Image (cartoon, rainbow, N blue to C red; front, side, top):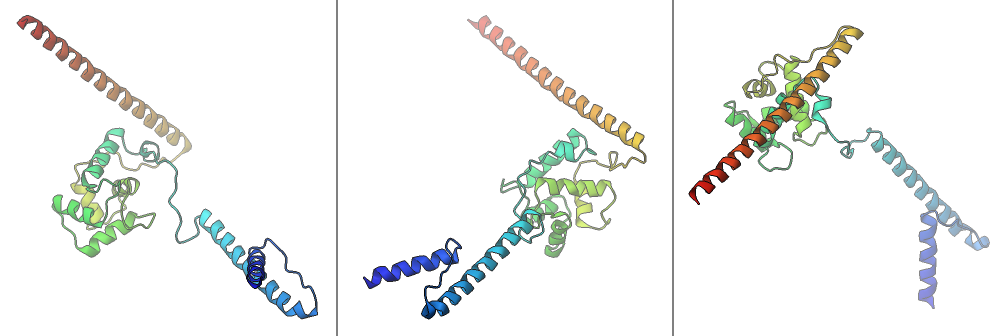
Length: 233
């Protein structure tokens, strides 16, 4: 009996703390307990308010531990200053040094990368290289952050003796002709946008033509092979 009563009291206390039930003072002797329960409920409400405020800050990107964005990243639309061919070269390079195949280049992979490029860096220099473009503060480079290296290099925003500048210079990816070109007027911006769009479409057509030509060549080789088989039958 006592156990049932204790269980009932604990259950009610839990409901009060979760805000599901309001504490009620039954008589004068219970005023002290009622006051204590109200205080507990007020503390729970305060804590809940803080949690809700923290959640709102995280949603607005003001918190320290913001969850990574689920937005799909499209390098061709975000990095319009580079051609499709250049971006594909950067992606190929990124995947080549992503030894873990986890879509990130961590400190050790960057170390091996710089060594293969013939420009080994100290541990501190490698950390500074990542820090310079590490927007999500996870101490490693995703593909978007990797592209930022070449954007900064093309814009002349990297110090000549910096590790990132050395990386961009030694990578066999020429971004000097493209650069990040800012339009001075509205009309120049319009022309630039049209040119970029036309270039993008032309590159797609070139890729489609190359694939079509490759498929045709494979078809011709298969036909020649079948004819050769028929000749030996």
